[in-house]
Image (cartoon, one colour):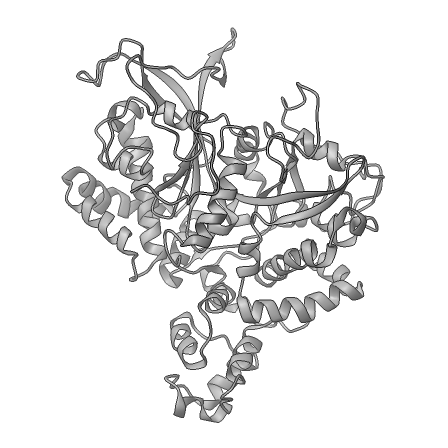
Length: 581
């Protein structure tokens, strides 16, 4: 069964979106390079793209300036694998200050989760072996991480996105920094993530580089290259991926035992059953809504059997398991994402979004037209370039600075601005929408339900969705949706003599590179993402596509103030960053 078909079947059977399938896919290399050129190379703060085993795929010049001076090391150089460097390198505690609590504990929580879902991967098994050989790391893994996952699920990992930390920089000494993480959309199923370290002082960088140092994408060969590498099996370095048979999802945790994994499903169930008032195993079916045999429940707690996903809500109610831990159990049972908890969070969500947008969307760091959107494509923040790109579009709820999805669906301008609107924009957008509905099962968010009704009212949209899109969802999988990361599409942008009364005339075609990512803190719980549209033009006799230096402007049209992040409206990060009214 092709990957896309297997993924879609998995979603239909389990109600989940597959989370982790190996740690690298070499077929993504071309897309990855385009993504890096837009979101890693040009950044002036140290930024790195890692695969699902935290091996370095790409980094920028600032990252090399910060970490490239370390002596050769056979396995743990920061230009080989930054996490192995952090965990195992003898100098790590001198560099990552407050090493245990500020850096290592969070990454061990993430490793524990990745390892549980992909425990047969040779690279991850090798890392687990090395953790067991270090008394401090083994204590953290088998006690503190186990307790954290049992009581809070994966909240520690999400909450850490944007946290302030401290690092020692040669020549500067102890330095406050911020670590933010995003998930490249094209690499989300293999655990790719981009990490950025940035200064807490506005206008100052962690490392100062001379002009011209940010021009090329870097796939560095570390200083460890002249040493013997770890002798991993070939499949570990060549996109090793586990059995993708969806039926295998329910067998993932069989055979897993503590302390090889940080915590098991059975241990979590036992912890909550034994909280006051303690319920004896043989009384579960008598005093709780969980009406299963004593033997069956005992098998669950002993990790002899795995509870089915359909039973999880009843187990949650019976044992009083918090939602965050129930969501972790969902992922441990199925190997897939649970449905999102909302499309937009509260004050804590807003605070993290504000920090994250400053690091990835703000004009000072991202010249490419970009927006940050919640799980229903409501625009949270956008930069001045994004506002300028759509300055000709009339105000209203379907303006792209309000909702990119509603713009594609319901704004008449989209049919003129978005080249090949139906095939390259409408159909993929509806496929992405259908994928969201599938992942939510029968429990749709109100905004998703309302969007569904709005689509039903439009004959063209509904005919496309109920016919072609449903067929593609059955046969083509979930990887062909709206955010086809690294895809080349086109814009028909207005020229200087554009007349809004004749919207189809006076336009010029430009190729556009579409890239996307999801902030770590939004990825699973909310489904938020970024949308970036890099406008290109032909250059030289060969017609090579290069980024356009100046976006075309239309006389008489003024760009909206760029969300909270326009260059003509300096960022005020003390005010709330909510969705637009």
